Image 1: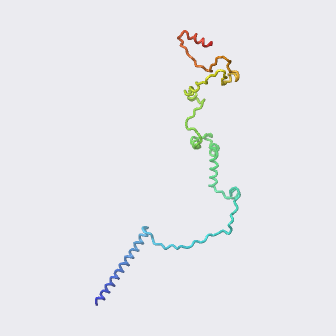
Image 2: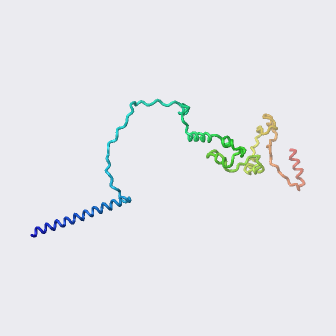
Image 3: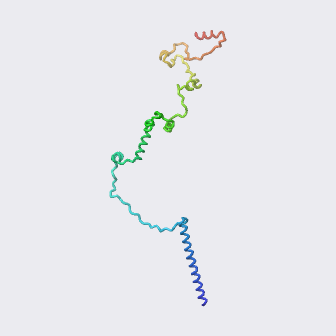
Length: 218
C-alpha cells in the first residue's frame, strides 16, 4: 500500500471514531436533558404554538337598546320570582340595624334585662363626633362641689357694681322693687348704691356706737 492510501485510510478511521463519539455524547446529553426535565430543573420541550386567527365577533341583528325595566325589583313585578335566603337574611339584618336597640326582635324576646341597655351596647351605639362628653359633668342641684363652692373669679366679677349716676334711674332687678319710673331720685337727694361696703368699727372704742348711730341718721 502506497503512502496516499495509508493517509486516506487514516482519515476515514479518524472520521468514523469521531462520528461514533459525537453520536454517543449526543445520546447521553439527550438522556440527561430528559431526566432534568422530568424533575423540573429544565423545561421540557414543547410543541410550537399554533397561532390561528380569532373568530369574528357575533354582532346582534338589531342595534337598538332594550327598553328600561319598570320601577321596582323583579320580585315586586313578579310575585313568583324565586327568593334567595341569603339575600333575604342580609336585608333583614340591614333593616334591624336601623331599628333602635330596645325595639329589636332579640330585645323583645329577651326580657331578662328588663329593657335596659348593657354597658357594651351603650358603647357600641356611640358615634364619633356625636358630642358625648367624656369628662364628668356637674350640674347645679346634683349635690356636688359646685352647689356649695363659688369660684373666686366669679365673686370678684360680681363685686364690681356699676357706678351710681345722680338724677338717673337705676335698672330694676327684682319684682319687689318699685316699677320703672318710680325709682328716679329726687333732685338734691343723696344717691347711694344698692349695696355699700360695710365698715366695721372697733367694738372696744367707746365712741364706736355714737359714730355708727350718727351715720345711720344721716
